[in-house]
Length: 436
Length: 76
Image 1 (cartoon, helix red, strand yellow):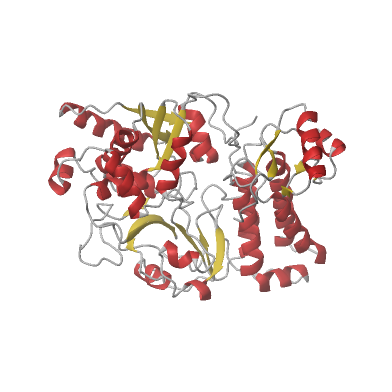
Image 2 (tube, one colour):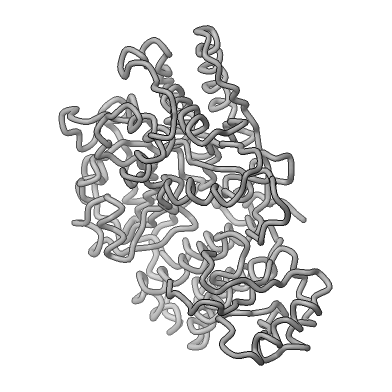
């Protein structure tokens, strides 16, 4: 493997630190195991309740004022879609059934680890946000939702809840472990899962009957930011990122930091050809376009880009972007819940075409077929899983345009290096997702 | 998102409930097309009385009850 940097100066130091003018979310940047839950290579002690209270003072109570605060602050969701929290809060008014508030810690992108890291380092900040929102919205139940294999995350929450109970806090928070598959963190799947149904995506259909149970799902980082907001702390100017080089790291970075500076500070010793933004269901952007852009979501949005839930996967020079893309589309196809026809049939079709292109079995029609199939699948699932795959394909065709031309013309693939990725390393080792 | 005129309807499909049986396209090909795997494509607001009538036929025909009509200005 060439050109893939290590991150020698981690953990324990900060990237793009600006002197502590605002609150930060993480205690320290961390090296994670290459795949799986966000367990750090070297243990970082969680912030205790005593430390948490010393830092921030007692938690205020959540009341109607918080609704205005959320509205006025423009707090965005941090699970990937960046939906304003106020939009979700307003949507609740459509019903009057019992409300379950969910802190969603089931990040499913194989490289993502920022939510798990936040939960392990500052569980009380997340639980504060959950309790505040539950109080402000009059929820009957509050739940922390985790992947079934996230033992470290579960331990962190359980320990924190015990600390809080010992101080007499009356917060009826339950820990619920979902399945391990890729879609177990999708918000409609979470909503069904916490109500006792299968944790699979569903379509929002016209409500049948009054008093139906309602569920509000917030990402754990969103809740941590809410907890700071409710204490009148200035909004953090940072972004939590999960970055994959030779190692997987989670860092907290000033949002004004450019991609070039991020990779330089992480010890990336050569220039990548492109970066996969947002994870396997994300999109490619060429390095020339990204290098001087800041990591702030607003800046990326105005360029038609997004970092989703903050996953950054640089592609080394010498690796074949089309081959990596073919692997990723196959992975996404395997992770379909196979509930919706366009996803169940469309993603394998996309994966086959992407594979044919990457292996030089392409012909002139193949690129058009990829675009046509992507157009056919886009927006036609119950959730946005298929849209992630179509966006990935479309961005790959644009980003690796020169490679596409070479592959279609049947010239040898210029790739000199493999680019192994967690969950898709080696042929045929992709775990099988749920079956219907 | 463009805002549709008041009162205009939109045909929707629940892709989880849909099994690609295809009766909808059979009775209402004016408003439903099938993709190459046999699943309905119901894009677009219904702009005329005949389209709305066709959409209602499609809703009634579906053995999986996967289709419904909703106001076109409703947030998805």
